[in-house]
Image (tube, rainbow, N blue to C red; front, side, top):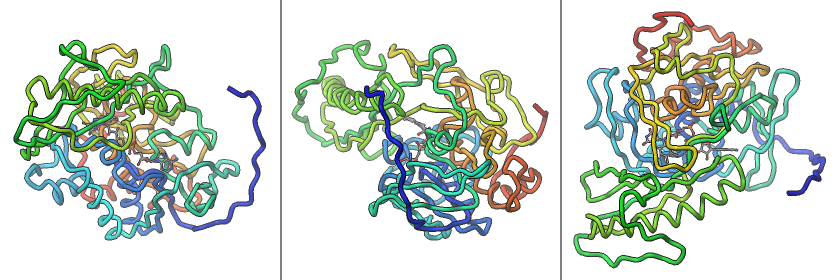
Length: 421
Ligand SMILES: Cc1cc2nc3c(=O)[nH]c(=O)nc-3n(C[C@H](O)[C@H](O)[C@H](O)COP(=O)(O)OP(=O)(O)OC[C@H]3O[C@@H](n4cnc5c(N)ncnc54)[C@H](O)[C@@H]3O)c2cc1C
């Protein structure tokens, strides 16, 4: 690794001025953009890939894990795309499997209806910060570097890429050793109705027992009832925000995928062929910002309630072994609040971080990270930036108004503000 560096100075043309720039088009980013636009703001949503949906589409994580509620924008997605799963009340759990291709199409159309301008193939590379305010995002586009200016920015990159670049302190992984949850390359198999030719390409492994498998278990879903099998069985140690780790993961996870498919074809799925491999390995955990409040394991286990609640979940503590062991730490939780302050980075007045990179410990993050909760956090962040008066620090977003606006947008929060922490 070289120890030299370069001072890199460029004059970058401004491409667009918006009220709100949202960076990252995953669950948090799409919901943030919609909610800000509903608040009357001109919103630009920047996404480095060609599709919206984040891990759900890009990494084919096409199951919504149960969180104890179906509310807000997440509820709209279920009502529009998966109506057969829609529970009558907001405080019920569902765990539907969905088509990542249909979600991708659905989100494109929804953004048009919601007046969100989406910019694909636009990767945030740097921030322009003056004092406590971010002025512009420097973005790598198909036309080169361009600046996107805004009054507020919402970092939904999953890695807190924007906040970190703007100087926000952060941590990664377990408190003791910094190790994060491992990565997984998701794939789908399809029942062809007849025995398939089993192949084991060069570089792959022969798995014979469940204990040989990377996770030491068989984990797949057949909920669509169309002969498809969604497989979550690979596991590669590393932090997906690190160059070397992700390089290793993209080759090792693919080896595992072909090896697992071959194993499944010998152990119950003799008529199934690989029909889709996600274009990128899924990343569970990378960086967490240091925010005004850090969600902890005690909050998750103890059912903490906060006056500035913006999302609620009862999804379990779910930690795939960061040590590359074949274990998964799964512990049921009864339900808790996530406070707005977890999205507010100290030191910046006009930036929020929504989605899996909020201020949380490793254990707490393992529970709040699933898609429905990230949609909820994004929606709250978008609503907050829209209603906070220009020039007022986002930490001072008016909470009663925020709760009223979320309710207007179809969000239902339960036992709101039951206790103060
Ligand atoms: C293998 C795996 C299995 C999982 N299983 C489930 C499950 O079964 N059910 C469930 O509900 N959840 C599951 N999860 C968790 C869930 O998918 C994620 O935690 C969730 O998608 C996080 O949402 P997010 O919006 O914070 O970030 P992400 O989904 O990671 O989206 C971030 C978006 O930002 C974009 N981006 C990143 N950097 C930049 C940049 N510099 N410039 C522009 N854009 C950028 C990315 O391309 C991406 O679109 C799983 C995750 C993984 C990896």
